[in-house]
Image 1: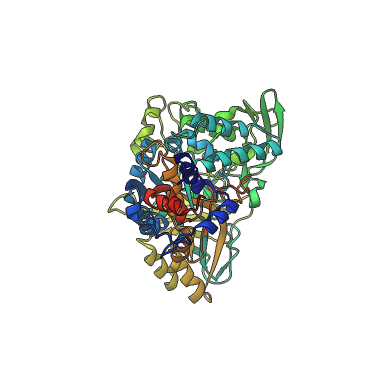
Image 2: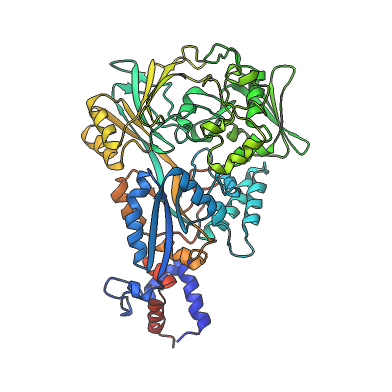
Amino acid sequence: MPTPRLASLLLLLAGSLLPADADTLEEESAITGSGGGLGIPAFSPDDCRPLSVDFIVKEGDPHASAVVDEITRDLAAIGISVNTSEVDREMWGELMSQGAFNMFMSKTWGAPYDPHSYATSWRQATANAHHVALENLTAPLTRESLMSKIEAVQKELDQSKIAKGWEEILRDVHGEAFNVPLWGERAPYVFNRRLIGVLPGNQLWAYDLNDVRILSGSANVTVAPGSTNGLFQSVGPLNPHLYFPNELFVNNWIYEGLVRYGKDGAIEPALATEWEVTNNGDGQRAVFTLREGVKFHDGSSWNCSVAKLNFDHVLNPTVKERHLWYGLPEIISSWSCDAEGRFVIETSAPYYPLLQELGYLRPLVMTAASAFAEGGTKTDTHNSCTPQSEGGFGPEKWDHLHENVTCVGLKAPIGTGPFKFVSKEVDPADNTTDLSVLFARNEAYWGGAPAIEFLEVKYFNDTDAVEAALLSGDLDMALGIGPLTSSQVRNFETKHSGTFETIRSDVFQNTVIVLNTGMAPTDDINVRKAIIHAINKAPMVEEEFFGLNQVVSQLFPKSAPFSDINLFPQWDYDLEKAALLNCPGYLERRLAAIPWN
């Protein structure tokens, strides 16, 4: 028999073998349904440590709900019972920030946020489940040292050093086994063939419809959009300076920033036509030449004073705390207008994602001066943030911000984008759900008026209602993740291709289960590895998503900047490794069967 030290080594290898080593071990002994290659009986849950884990899933997430049963079944095979709680958005956020979970269904944020902004958000328990999940890492790695690396790499400007820095970070993260990578999300677009020019946006929830053309029928178009809550429910107060229930897809239609995030990550001109970024002492200085002749939806002019006004409100010293899920609000040290009417941003340190983060759909996008209360000059007493009585900064955990600032919101949603807000019909039954929201094309849009005259967002109770409305002709488009199930998308693709076109985006974001290192039993890295290897992703993805999504083995999509690296061990399905990690009875039989002499 091997010594305890050798047995421990074998257990360690089970969770961290490279592919070549795994092949060697498989030759020595293989688990099958009827016994291994050395005549070892197949393991059963009776061989395993009986463990229990709490699994948190957000209510209304159709993809998460679809796979909970399969995940529960897979983990039961190695003796782990799963207590699943499907909770509403608010409770989901509370449990996340409290760390009251072992397993937490989540997603990366996709382009343009991965990996830098997503990883930066780990410093806030209120922003990301990874904050509490990083509590108990393997020494010498700690949450603090990992966050220091993430902060430091973003202050690099040399591309080779940035790539090297992210490779080290991603290897650290991967090796700690606190993520179960499941699948890469692709957004489906199903639309009536009377429309052409519909293309996937360059980021999730960015439905770019200003280039759509109409081949037949009305210039009025109806749409069921995927939203941050799955099926569309409400556009919220249409305030681009804050978050849910304000919707990103609406920001993309109404508002614009200085730049925008383009195809393959290119930074494209928007309300700025050109820019120059130079080193300035310890930081950087970015000078933006603003687009001339641009009008807001109320007819007022876009200029540098309006840019500064928007920055004044979003980056108010108190309000700024709400935006520290990403790095830019913290790194900006000043913003001003120069004598030539250019907008000037200075940073306290070099910051490579500067332009990319200025292309986000919120919060640093521009609304007209007329939308601000009291002329916009009183950012402490009349800030554009949402009043507390209307939801304020979001969940109660942000209520302390109201002690030092008075939020009054915006008078109206007035941007420069291709569509402008007209009206909405609110369901009187709950005074929350928007049954219909109407937008009109911006005839004066600097990029050319859209062909769509009126764009109506419609509410539906469920995906069956969306499907029926498409087939009846009452609905023109279902865009993104949420309005239709994967099977319904497949049905349109195979049975209704004469009337409807179906396209898919590239992988935007990865769905993952975050494992909490600070709560037993997932504080044990071998338990985390056992969970990862026990979940059989491939049939789950095939059965539930009909080829729409793709199995993944690491945290970020390989299309994300600096993320196209091979990480080992691969976090793939391997029931034998999972059994070796959590089933001591099986391990003992494995060790006993090995011919040590």
